[in-house]
Every structure is written in structure tokens, then in C-alpha cells.
Image (cartoon, rainbow, N blue to C red; front, side):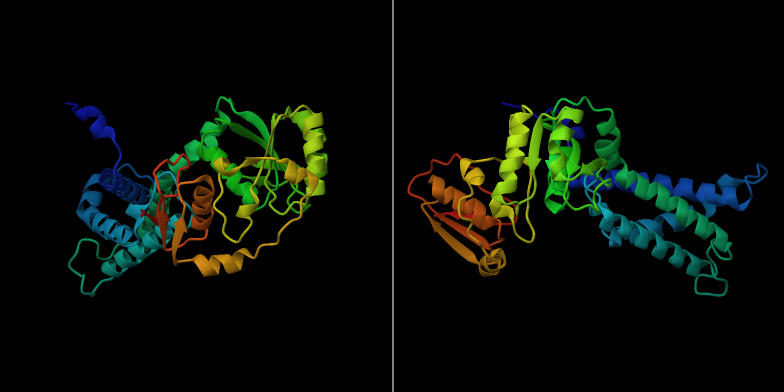
Amino acid sequence: MLRNNPIKSLFRTSSLKRVAFFCVADVVLIILSLFLSFLFQFDLSMNIDYVGLVSEVVIFFIIIKIAVLASFRVYGMSWRYVGISDLLNIVLALILSELLLIVMSIPNSIFSHVPITGFPKRIFFVDGIISLFFIAGLRISKRLYLEVIRKRGFAKKGKRTIILGAGNTGEMILRDMTRLGYGEFYPVGLLDDDMSKVGAYIHGVKVYGKTDNLGKIISEQGIEAVIVAIPTLNHKKLKDIYEVAKKANVDTIKIVPRIYDFDTPDLNLKSLEDISIEDLIGRQIVQIDYGVIKEFLKNKTVLITGAGGSIGSELVMQICAFQPGKVLLLISMIRISTPWPSGSISATLI
């Protein structure tokens, strides 16, 4: 009988452990923030009993801030994927916390007998700034390490890659490379025909110039892989890119599949395809109204017959991209090599 290793179980992440960790960390940061606020209030004087001052009122700061942070769902955030909206929640929560503490400090109010009454407003202002720096800094620390610090010191084992297209699609590909630690592809730069993007940086990666500069960039930067992240690129332009890359001895040339050319694509490195002969010879392009298809399928229950075959499996993958409510799979025998999407979509075998 296999027994769980107690040490591994202790360090295995869970939502409860994450909440407990951040609550304890926030308590420590709140105490430290208040202590530093008193230091600034008294101009760093060493003749003040700071420990005594902090101990009298710190319980109010802890209760108010932890309660408000929890009400803004700060403790439900993913440490790895903290974004701008999460940081905004932290800012709003701390502003509300300081306002509540200021109200409690007003003399002759219903809180007139609490130790915080009559506190200088400067303490609340400084405490709010320091708390924001500490609490928000803790939340973004993991992402900062993984996407900035580790990247700069990372052993660049992936293929040196140039991404064609600095729009939403190129940004998603770049973000997925970062998430995977650059194990397969290491982004050296981007190219885009929009001159307003040239010279800009996306996730720390520079847009070097237009796509016509591909041959020059390959030579200068030692490019080993090319990713075409422009879903609407015509076949003539794609053929020119392919020939330039091949002439420069680049063997790895990937392209975004056409099916992802709609309003809210969900794209990653696994979605990329090799350029096919049909892409190069310019087969007739069928214009598909993805908006109408999405409106037709979204939140609907869809039955797919023959879902165990290659065509059925592909239908499952493509239909799930349009956010149906439920997918029913009718198969004659279970022999599936293609993984079906999982997550919020319910897929039921019949």
C-alpha cells in the first residue's frame, strides 16, 4: 500500500494553504508598515517607544485591513497570474481600509473611546502607501521572478525565435513562451508591419521592424525558428516569408491555425502548426463569419456523432472554442488519441 509522504504533503500547494500564507504574511506586513509610519511621523527619532505605540493600535489596523482585503477577494488571487485588475482590487481595498481607520480616529464619533482616536492623518497616509508597496509587491513577486528576473538569467536552451506579428496573437504566443520557461522557443524579437509598434517592447521583447526585414534579422540575431502570428496573412506574403526563412537555413517555421481568427482566441504554443503546401500555393480561402458561429453555438448543448474518430475529435476541439454550454459525444468505441478540451465546458460520453 502506498503511503503519502508527510513532507511532500506539507509543501503541496492548496487554496487553503495559499490563503493562510497570505493572511500571515499580510499581518506581518501590516505591523511593519505601521511601525515605519510612526518612524516617519516622528522623523526617525530614537527617543520614542515605537513598540508601545504600535502595540496599542495595531489590532485595529490588522482587523480592518484583512477584512477589507478579503471582501475584495484579494485572497483568492493566483500568485502566479496576478494581473492589473488584481492590483486595482488591492489599491481600492487599502484606500477603503485607510478611510475606515480615519473615520474611527475622528474625536467625538462613535469610536471616541478607541486608542486610535485623534491619530494624525499623516500616519494613515504614509501607512497606506507603505502597505500598498508591501502587499502588492508580495503578490507580484512570483510573476516578477518568473517573467523578468529568471528570464534574464535563464539558460537559453530553447530555439532562438522571431515572432512575426506584434498584435494580440503575437502577445499570446510570447506570453505562453514565458509561462513555459522558454524550454522550446526563446523569443529574440518581433516583426510587424505597423510602424507605430516598431521599437516598442512587448513583455520585454523588442519589435525590431517590418516583416520585410526578416532575412536581415535572421542573420544578425542567429534565428533558429520563425513563428507567423498573423492569422489574416495572405498566401503570397506567407510564401515570401517561408522562402526567406528556408534560404537562411531556418527549419522550424510555425503558423497560427486559421480557426483561431476570431474575436477572443485562446492560443498557445501547442496550437501552432507547420506551414502546409495549401498555405503556400494559395488555395481558395473560405471567408467564415466566426461571430455568427459563436453566437449560434455559445451556451448551447451540442451533440457530436462519431466523436471518437479523427474528424469527430477535431470537431470537438473547434466547437469548444466557441464556448458551448455542454457537448455530448456519441461514440461507438472508446479509442481516443486526441485530448478533448476541459475546464468550464461539460463533455459527456453517450
